[in-house]
Image 1 (tube, rainbow, N blue to C red):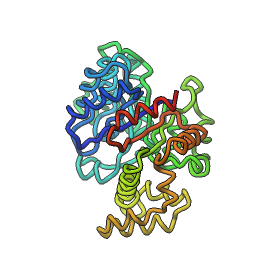
Image 2: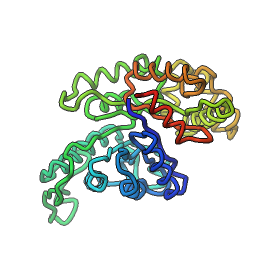
Image 3: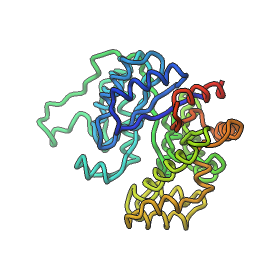
Length: 343
């Protein structure tokens, strides 16, 4: 099992890069760089490529709407070259609040667009002359432009023509597509005992169409991590605040995938309560309304023996990348300790 973490998009990127250098020394395998309505992720990932030697660098995630598919492919190929073949392209649809509210782009057909973006990226990396007909028309048809466009192929030779593609997916159609076409899955919410119950049918639908050449689907899972007694409360409170935000505030009523998945995990009443409280501005009450059982399932908090059992449960559920947010006075040392557990 690989060890992964995600850096905050709100922090000083230079200071963050220094922390990643130390985490790499402690055994971190992959660092994910998010992009919301923040500093762009690509600049930070390029800097990380120069500052690190071994750790994989993943976009976690680049929204599919904010770049053309070919620019996404060009960016991935460039970062893969700069890092010596250490880049992982994480893609996701984000949400209408960011895409329409910040980028001013319609949020439509996220599953179909994701599929086409991946298909176009792989054509670019294979240095094919890119043609595509669907939601994205490449080259642009004559009646929609000057008529001068022609199929082109990437000038550079990519380090890899098979750059790993991971997809952030929660909805059933998106999960099925991810299981079919992606290298890995970024599910955001993983309660190991309920993965098969909640996501099993969609995963099996996708696996039935999966090209064996892609290999087994990789997957992240984990949570806020704390071992020290005085840090466990902080970690659990941080988890409550984050999940209250996503379950309660990431979308309108009836248009929140995080809330839907939470309900499907066995908490329909709590899902409504948390969302109502959060949208009413009562954020602390929303966090407190999350069931203790759910917080247990979404965090790695407690003595080492308990955590090692929990990690084994995640592996049993299909997690290949233990994804942690260490809460400690010595987060790098804590990561090193987990690295030893993983072997």
